[in-house]
Length: 470
Image (cartoon, rainbow, N blue to C red; front, side):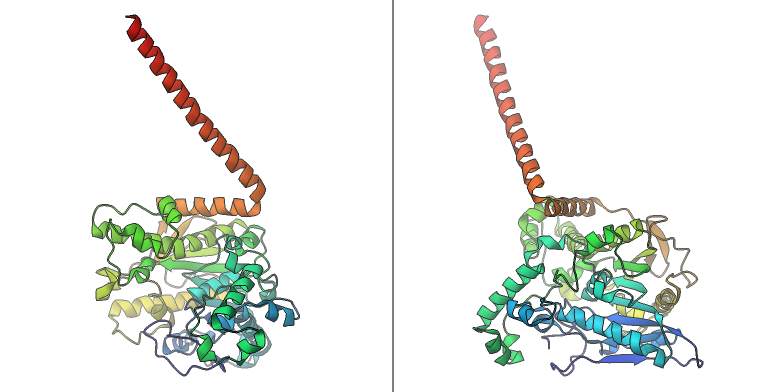
């Protein structure tokens, strides 16, 4: 059940609570041959999307000798509503994360059944985009997903922030949000809520999120990564050059309204601390806003994901997709590589645009490299230049018409975001010492200011006294 579709230009099919189906694309293969398996997890903010839309058809990828699996999982309130009553009914005493549990159930199905289709259950790769990639970062540390997949490809999305600081993502906070949802829905009990129609419930605002429920996700992913508690053995992850464009669609950004536009998505203090300067023209303000939206939502996560996995010895291949296409009239740009732009090239077909020879060549390269990674856990020998792991050399592969390596050098905005999350993580892990240190710092600053005032007053008095003596 969902409102709308993701991507927004995807055809909308029938909507039903009877939605938990999967699709298989199996290439011709010799009897007894064990093929690598690629399981796609779609994006859409955990609120929209489908594994069956034509964009995600796996026929082109399957031609590279892999089995492709796509599937549906529960979305929105049906996938992520947490309630005390639901937790009480559960044998694990948890609620929420039902959509994530659907993903785990699919991976278990693959382990049990894929050999019957010629697949190798020991070579399963999960790949996904946006909230699908966020899901993969969660599955990569979930105790429930241990042993269910070997490799992971993440496209523009991760869950590496100190999520324990977001109250609605903790078990307690999520259940409190669920109770508020029930109240807004006019349901006095869980029984009354269940008697309401799906369409009526979907009219009540709800923001889904993966929850620290203590079972499916028993610790923040960043914490698990630092301790080396990671399920996959290799990663290929990255983001697109202009991720932030879609979040400014329909907005005219100027130096004067810069803080107001960003303030619709972020707290004002975060903007003050971390956002780049808007400059002096609408063009510079728009570019700064695009960069900040993309850095906070995607680029920082992928950079951090690469750093954390590399530090505990996992091979990580970091990429940046950069293939600009014309922007729509209300997007505020001439051309860009926005969020989701890589997906047609990964799946080998674009249903909305005629491809040039360069488009076809780029897609052929990406299909080949994604399948190569699923085969061996490495994109080597797929047509790209030599691509070292991030732990060997902190670089990223720019996947474009002329692919090339560049150093991973985060700009000042990314550094500020990193420092902000680092401080937040310290506070979350050690709240009482952090408060004490903060009070000491405040006292020192106040003391320093007072000392400077006293010193200045005394100096002025001495000068006045000398002048009077003369």
